[in-house]
Length: 209
Image 1: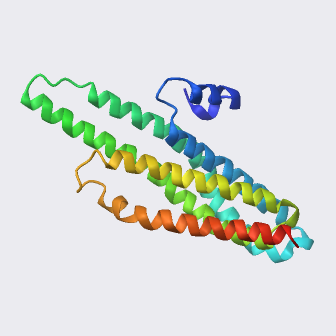
Image 2 (image 1 turned 135 degrees about the horizontal axis):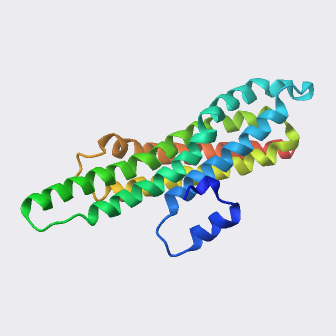
Image 3 (image 1 turned 180 degrees about the vertical axis):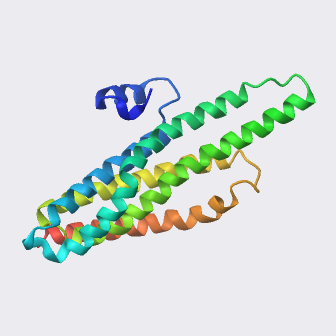
């Protein structure tokens, strides 16, 4: 089942079920998709409106980022679930002799690495989206500044939620696997919090004007 083809109610029921998929990684990617959609809405409400001409550059930048993320977020939601299924399939492989044990171990590790890389892409795309939202909050359509705030909250949740999934998978792998991701995670988490705080401050300041 493709999660993006479900109704919102169907997806929510699937998420609430005892089935392991969809899980947190899929939910994080869906949150990124919703954040992307809200960001696009504010950009579209800004572009071409003379009253908000000061925000056109910010809106154009946001639109550039949104174009990369809009459809990909939905794909990542499905890929995350598929990756988990691949890990489970690897664990079910036979292990009746040393050769099978070795093959099974390698398949588990490769599938687990893939299950780390997919939410990591959610993280990277989310950080790109966060990077454009402060300017949109400060200079975009003032009537939609609260929507930028909601978009930023969803984006932050997507990034931090996806990071959990990256980390829990990397923990079960040898240290030499996923080294680039391991190095980047602490800095990403710190920057995500900083960007989120800045956006929230910009939203509050704009609403107070």
